Image (cartoon, rainbow, N blue to C red):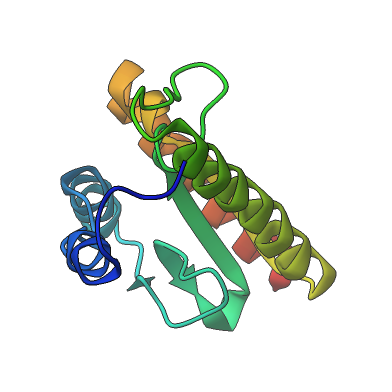
Length: 139
């Protein structure tokens, strides 16, 4: 089934989606308070949520919906064909981006949105530990 919006309407809807979520802002504020310095939404392949270029560290906070979480990802009931293609492409892109960074020798971490909802402090500590260990490996 084709998209039920015109190309212009779909473009307007997709542009309205923010590149930073409230969750990402909470996480980055917590990490900043811990003393970590990084760039948010750096202009790198895949646009990582957190990047430390000099230490070759990228971190992605993956939304359960947009990245098709196996536990919490849900498929919209309307326009199913469109969404299946869209979300499947997102999953493939995530795999390609992860492979790219690993092949280039970067340290990459992907954290699901639901991990923060279950235990925000623990998920934030996981990122902090990842950054610390990655920096030690690179020094």
